[in-house]
Image 1 (cartoon, helix red, strand yellow):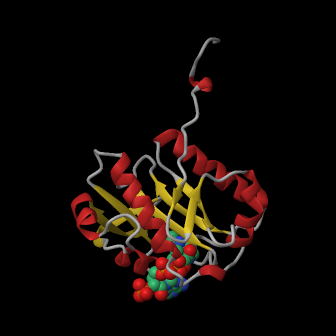
Image 2 (spheres, helix red, strand yellow; image 1 turned 180 degrees about the vertical axis):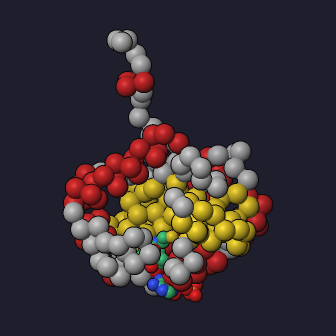
Length: 191
Ligand SMILES: CC(C)(COP(=O)(O)OP(=O)(O)OC[C@H]1O[C@@H](n2cnc3c(N)ncnc32)[C@H](O)[C@@H]1OP(=O)(O)O)[C@@H](O)C(=O)NCCC(=O)NCCS
């Protein structure tokens, strides 16, 4: 051992995105308390396998998000309201071995549902993904079929259902938007 190696691999620089009402920024350990409040709500976690109430477990989730950036060059951001500085959720991109493509993901805490935040954050993420990854021909979303709110976000983004995908052995409705369709749909910030 010794010398520069994998354990000295430099960190990926995670960008910060700004939308009309939101800031998408890298998460850090100072976010664990606010994320735990969001993830411990059973209604929020209904389609996510149940609430996560322990800050330690939320810290591990956050570490996974930052690890996704490091391993794949894409990942989730923490979503903050510009007006108040409040952390309202997590959204962005996800990729892992066996995935049907780069996925747009969205999680907004219950106090902020119904304001269009998931759609706004996802739109910025998708625009960023197509701009930064020229080889990407589509962005997908994999959604548990009973998750009405999430299905609506996908449709509102102009995604269409393409298939059923088995991810971690669970069936998911697979939605997708192509690069061409996205370019036709909206200029950045328009949604
Ligand atoms: C799904 C979720 C991200 C939606 O966030 P949001 O910021 O409220 O979504 P938007 O305001 O952008 O609304 C998009 C659409 O979803 C609808 N919607 C939002 N939450 C909903 C819910 N719980 N049930 C049914 N519809 C819902 C909105 O009315 C809107 O519909 P419209 O296009 O017909 O007007 C949010 O409810 C959430 O984080 N849920 C828990 C985590 C989760 O399941 N994430 C998705 C994993 S695949």
